[in-house]
Image 1 (cartoon, one colour):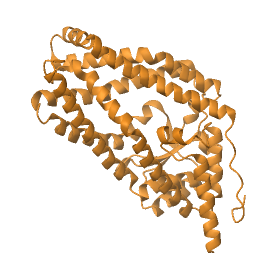
Image 2 (cartoon, one colour; image 1 turned 180 degrees about the horizontal axis):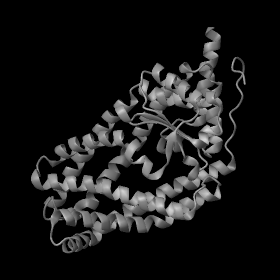
Image 3 (cartoon, rainbow, N blue to C red; image 1 turned 30 degrees about the horizontal axis):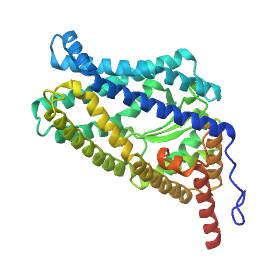
Length: 383
């Protein structure tokens, strides 16, 4: 492939890829509708209060235990309602020959995901209602500060605590590739604690790679589906993109953006709770039957901000791509890896404008390939 003259047209999306992504989006919208509808029904019918009373009885009138029981019931019923869609999503991956997972393993992953979600949500929810009871006027500021601290801690612990619950990792045995990636990381000014083979093939045929963790837990993880099907130059190009996020301080910037969004969310939650109490929907702020109202508030804010946050994410991805172009000898491996990933992951190369704006956190693959070709032509013209 040459880039000095006219560029080759990017491969067109197959009908299969378009169909798969269209169904996948509809599943996401349906899941969102069921979850939101469930929360609204709980509030409009008064069932949330009934669940609260049940939790208090089962928790022997212990407030902290009752909050956890209520949360469990909420998440469990929500999971039951969405299970049909989850199973259809599993079958969809099978239908398009992307999943390698057996039904039993999928169910086990679903169970683990529910338990992990329950633990993490339990920590946050118990903290929120403890703060509401102790400092009703300033709870949202305190909750925001503690939540951001937990967010940073979890980002650091995720590679060593959360990821291994669902995936297997082992040190990369290819010493030559490991050395190349370590050198590339050092040139980017980041120190990684290891390079790991990520056994993604036990669940899917899709490929991925990431630079995960913070500080002492930062590591490179490479899916075996990537290692087994891509040349070293292509793997290096994929990692160069990930390192671009470090060079441009996207992790820190994203934490700051998340801090702003979360602060807005907690402020809105406080406003909505006070409004609900003032209008006699609940007797007091600490009535945990108002948890669905908090969840709806967070959902509405996330939905309203999603296009802007996606646009910001796409901007970061373009910067990371540019760093990759500058860090590798030629953009050919980047382009070939993008096209391979699109085919292997059954991704849309050219989604419609509105689909990209509303749903995509990464630029369209066709645009990323075109940017690489344009950069290469610029380098050739300037030589």
